[in-house]
Amino acid sequence: MSLEDPFFVVKDEVLKALSKTREVYERWRAVEDGSEYRSPEEQEWTVTELKNSLRSIEWDLEDLEDTVQIVEKNPTKFRLDGAELAIRKGFIESTREEVVQMKRKINTQADNKLNRQTSSPVQHSTAGNKYSRLSNIADSPHREYIVGPDQQHQQQQRVLQDQEETIDLMSESMGTIRSMSNHISVELDEQAVMLDDFGTEIEHTDSRLDATMKKMAKVLHLSNDRRQWMAIGTISSAILVVLVLLFVL
Image (tube, rainbow, N blue to C red; front, side, top):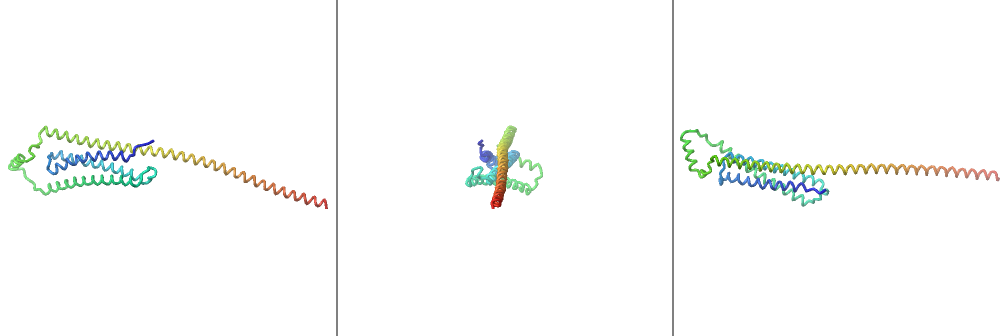
């Protein structure tokens, strides 16, 4: 029974997840760089989605690493050479490095924001501050992005859509892991059948060996009896010859 190589099944899932994660990462960077504007809540949801997607990719990479280690232990069985194993390891390492870079960038930005918040002076809410904030909003280059009811609804819909995409990615990953588990179960069942056949063959061989040993013992016993009769016959013949000679003489 020919089954698809589980490495390529998981690899396809990783590439799909990585492509979607890159899109979310670019949207997040655009807001952080100031080229786009989003509300803090929406940006926070984007960060959460990024972290979940990156964590899911890391789990898939661990599964890929497990398959490579299994093949390394018995390359003859899986018919894979060193060059193919090197290619698979290279894909895992390059993808993991990209994931690490994204996580490092996200964590660095979060740390920078936290430092700015802790270092900025506390402003008291006075009337003048209220008016100055209003004037700042009016003069802000992003004043057209001030969230109204319709825009807030659109942002919520976008956040929900991003969450659904993340859930879909995790569902696909779980399905891939389930497929690999079924594949391993089939392999174990086939090996169990092979072991049973091997044990039966050993039992047959033992039975044949016992029968052969018994036959050899019988042959050796018969040959010993023949030698004894031959010795008895020779002695009897010698006695008869002596008796005859005595009577003759």
